[in-house]
Image (cartoon, rainbow, N blue to C red; front, side, top):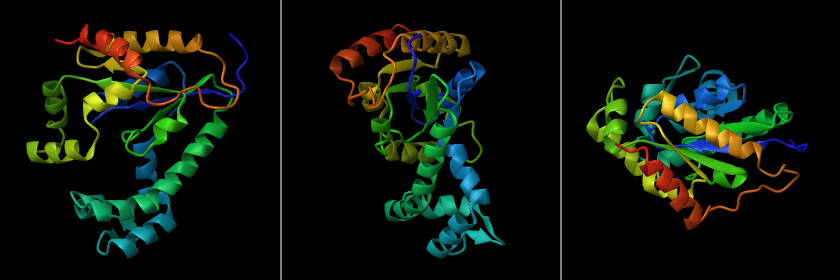
Length: 230
């Protein structure tokens, strides 16, 4: 394999309940570093004293004894775009700094994975060489999400409205991974992507991806996705 000056950066994303976390676990099983943006946010809410102070000032009543009360914070920003933007202004720069540190620490790997639910919505896809979208039929998605504590059909619909539609994400993807047919199928699809990425030109500077990937890539990946649909 040609020598790589830096790792390939793969953005991993998908709508709620589409199987992104399970797919990220497959990459970890192959020994590849994965940064989980959600996990980083949770860490900040637990440990970053400056962030916690800023949240306490911006959202009174959501911090108690130095601890963020996540249900109250979630209620404060849910279906409230201005409040959500205030929270993002506090957290996003810190998450971005953590991402830069992650990339620096894993510079010797041939591939790193950025697991980011709102990859397209935040424009971070432009910082990736390739983008993988995980997807499943709508009924599978709903069944998964509605098993979560406190989740209702109305809440699921409200979350869907805040995210890019699954079809729009698939149109922007370099790789589409179906997760509705079991983990064995998902694992096999991920392995195929890894083989393709191994053959990709070694990154030496600028990112390899020029988003959007284009209709040809979308048609090719959509055809593969449809072959796995029930």
